Amino acid sequence: MDGFAAVDFGFAREVLQRGIAALYLVAFLSTLNQFRPLLGERGLLPAPALLEWVAASDTRKRMLNPTLFRRIRYSDRRLVILCWLGMAVSLLVVAGIPQLGPPWVPMVCFLALWLGYMSIVSIGQTFYSFGWEMLLLEAGFLAAFLGSNDQPPPTVVIVLFWWLLFRLEFGAGMIKIRGGREWRDLTALMYHHETQPMPGPLSRQAHLLPRWFHRVEVVGNHFAQLVVPFFLFASLLSWVPEPVEGWVPGPVPQIVGAVAGVIVIATQFWLVLTGNFAWLNWATIVIGFSAIGLPSVVEPAQGDETPWVIDGIPLYWFALTCAVGILYLAVSWPAVRNLFARRQLMNASFNRWQLANAYGAFGTVTKERVEIVVEGSPDEDGAEWREYEFKGKPGDVRRVPRQFAPYHLRLDWLMWFLPLGRSLDDWFTGFLVRLLEADAPTLALLRTDPFAGEKPRWVRAVSYRYRFAARAERKAEGAVWVRTGRKVIMEPVGLK
Image 1 (cartoon, rainbow, N blue to C red):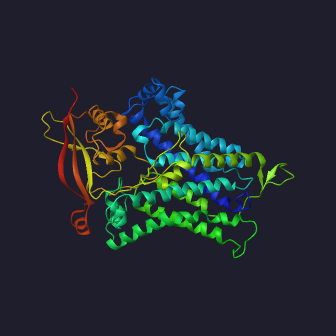
Image 2: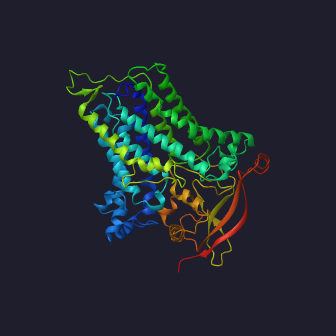
Image 3: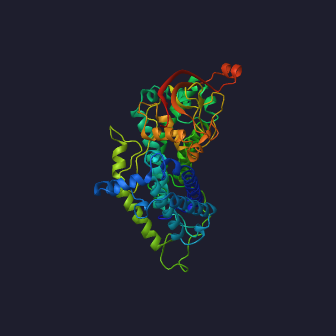
């Protein structure tokens, strides 16, 4: 740190700007491929119906988060245009082109991404109700103020990224400590790899590791989320202009902060290897680089070239980033209070702009995996039943789970929530109707259509208990999963 300029965090800025833009690219691509059949004009939960309902009441208007579609009437065509524009801007930032100009150019790009994606999240209803949506929005807003290549990053913005990472990690750790007993007795990860929403190709191998290893995993998780985040701010100590008595000068504080960032990054890579959590882990990895300071390759602007400069930062940019810091001081108090509240909120926003949010995940771990399998029959009497295969969630017991993250399979994720004590939501009923209609956009969300585009006569929902096959079972039967306890939870339904 060199006063108001984080001169050693040029590399961190490169990772933050390009990494966050890459995640926006994935988010817009996911929306382009899935929003219309899920939430479009003929979607399972049509966004136009939501907007009409909101428009009918002043109270509801205040409830809806900001979205361009309140000013511009929603249509699937306009949604597609927004997604393509979002992907184009994301690619420009990933390539580093806006960063070659003055700092307001990448700012405009990131604010456009932030507002564009918030316009989608605000009308995305249950399909966009995940914590990583607000995480991406907040990270995109902060990235707008990192500046461009001809000046060092502002210290205040780098510190705000540490504050975001602290809330993300410490909030998740506190949720676990306050949550299920399995996190306190160190047994949570004896179940989690098997019961997580969407296992990956290495999840079974992770689940079959020894019990003592899973206990070490939990201890490591608690250390990484409850202890390490406090050391993210160590680099601030290097901002002290004159070492005080007993203080050790030099790069020690910055090294401590960097080590904290590396620990966060390493633990997140383990989660990437063993699961499919959309861009949650990848976003945390990218933000983790904000703590890693390296010798700067940025040449600060010189006074004779820029008349009004503070620590290499143009005065107008210094003023703007300080204003952002003051804004965060004002809006962060609810998040601070939530971290230490007895009834801690998980993945909650305290303002309409989704800044300074509360984060957290998996306060409890399910110990048994129940999967809902959707079947269809071509026969009037329902003599033969064929399964619909989803892309990510378990189905065929011989199929090895695939790696999809950071891409987000929204339908598959919501299918995981259905057996967890919830009633079969309205969207699920609509989904079954689309299957009966052999609706092509809906079928495109699935891995296989057992009727090759033809309409089934009936569809129904069946539940099974799934568990990973032991090594001997895998060797003998070639199965990845073992499923038992078949139960029909929705009787056959058909179109009149």
